Image (cartoon, rainbow, N blue to C red; front, side, top):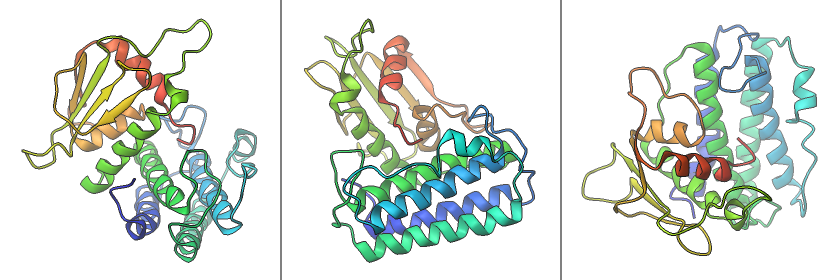
Amino acid sequence: MSTLSFDRCCAEVTAQTDLLRSHVKGAGMRAPVPSCPGWNLGQLLRHVGGTHRWAEEVVRTRAAGPVSDDLVGDAALARRTDEDGAFLDTWLAEGAERLARTLREAGPGARVWTPSEERSAAFWARRMTHETAVHRADAALAAGADYRLDEEVALDALDEWMTFASYAEAARTPPGGPALLGPGRTLHFHATGPAPGTTAGEWLVDLTGDTARWSHAHANAAVAVRGTLTDLVLFVYRRPTPSGTGGVEILGDEPLLDLWLERSGFWLN
């Protein structure tokens, strides 16, 4: 369950989009996006706006199954190599507003298809908040703009990631691949920002049982990762951290951390 309210997530869809638009104002749409190899800035913006429209269709139609992702697929983006920045700015704003409006009209409990165990519009409000926030980091990097995440948004982004990483699919061993679960396999993430004396900014991932589990807890672990909230979000999404922040500090079993990150990656990022 999201620590952000449904209304807050709906508002963040447009707020994160507006921040993204401000990062790229005046930037060339052909600028490469280092964190999304093969994409230029125009293609990134097409992906974000297309994803908003795709999710809006899922919620508006109360889809019972997957909806075609033609708007966000690689084939569609490959044709978008020379975009007009002014047009995309308006197009992004319209798509985000439309998605937020459709989500509010549906309400958090509206039953719709999702790629997760949660079949509700609330899933899409949360997912699109963090989808947009992470791609805002990509845009900021490409345009040379500063990037920071609001503390509450970053905390929820990490909660969401930990939840996806605990699905059975993430822990399943692929043919010929190494096992993720096993004795002594634990990870601890510690954010340096939240108020001391609480565990809101700490995540313990337990891989010692028959499935992956996570909780907000302080404990010794096989590998520990420490950094600001923004840096931790970017780290799990395999994005570069902003210059000057120092990045994250890793202590312990780095191969275990790398394997967990590989298995826990979310499909829509």
